[in-house]
Image (cartoon, rainbow, N blue to C red; front, side, top):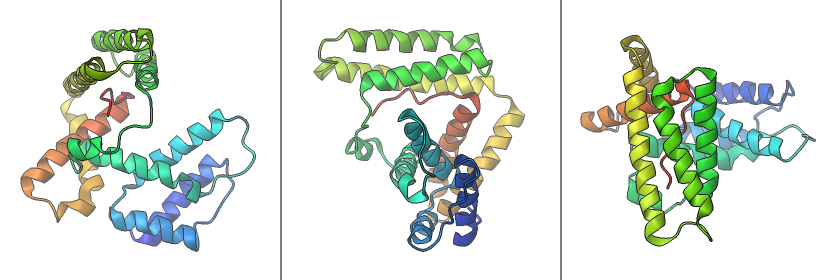
Length: 230
């Protein structure tokens, strides 16, 4: 990532200050050791920021905030996002990921996916070519809600397989909507994200991880969710 632990911590401290509406909480002592360990493990700064965002989203849903958030409170979310990032770029294989299933229910996942797709469509970030994907997710959500006691057994496996197919189609559609200049910029950003892992990777493995990182970054730019469910 091209940063020393102290610089990494200061970046996180600055981001957390903004999230806390300007209230500065220093990342020092045990908190510094915790965050320095993230840097040692190769957690990209953007992943840390996404984990912080996830904690704050949940915090805001609980009602008015009463106190500034310390970085220590965000660790579980940061590490969850890091696991998701590693799966997205291929550092964790599907079989290993299955050992740590999502804590989110399938209907809740589908609702979040549908909301994010609809928001991206309404904002103009994606065009009408994505409408069939939105409709397909809506159908899956209706089916999941209609199933008494939730989808189970073969029906659940089949739904998860369909979502994985939709996810691949959504990625291909996102790629086809991006011009060469945007893809080149995302490739440079992917190289920065993967810098701390590159020396330990074979060229073909790095190439796959780089492509997966570009796909993830493109999704972020377009506001697209991950449709696949694990």
